[in-house]
Length: 332
Image 1 (tube, rainbow, N blue to C red):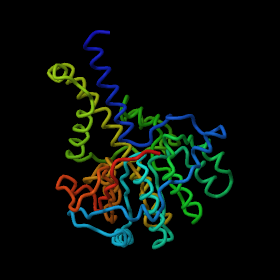
Image 2: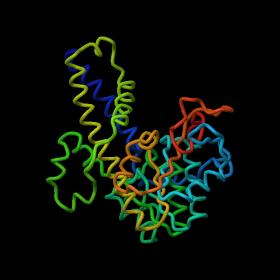
Image 3: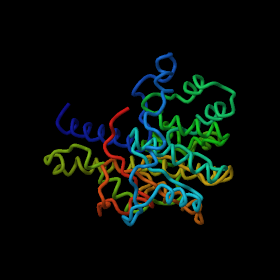
Image 4: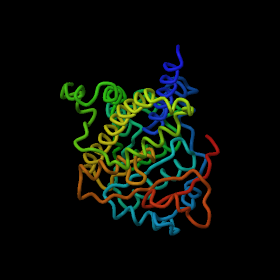
């Protein structure tokens, strides 16, 4: 393998790894549920109490400190609540679960939607929520693993089950996301009507600011050397790869937004739990929700994995309507 080929492979490998991280649950950290030990790992309770979760420091977008009650009150005025989490962060996920529980206290007809379930897993979710199958069968049917079903996610599903509320599998199956990246939207348009129910092809463009943020994150994490960055041909190839990857990212956003729009017929508010890149600073999913439902009232709650100070740093202002500081993750 020559230097150029190695450089491209390195850049693309990091690019794709970061896309999966930004886009949703990480598959395959451990085997999908099947054995008793796997089921035990997937059904372990949260270590952080709801009371501790509700005491995390939070701020409004402007930097003004806010209380948990103010946050919950704000959710009652929204049609769609978008929770932008740090994937796998123990405290952050406990806060998201407590928020979902308290939303239901004020709005018993609320609906949960989750990025981390794909549309072709909806039957497994519905069967579990309605008691057709037990939890072991559910974990197997929806391909849950420790990597994509942490205790906070389970807590959210269990809260919905106990309140008899729907959980919407919001995301496009990865095979279609991959197809969008490799072959484009026209390839998706050529699929059958039944296949087309599992994804949504964007009907509008994302903002230039969202694309710029995407490129910035991807380039920061690509690990390119100065020599590689100076290689015009390599960077042109990388730009083409970024175009393709962003195409799949935007389809991901658009599909989740369509899932949210459809879920509104089931109750209100719809609470979408999703990776924070998709929603903070008017991210792609927020844009797609508004494009498909122009009159929707949205509320964005996002997390920062840094300890809170007395004041919100200027750089964190505007991330969301409410910003919660959760500190560094202490692990599962």
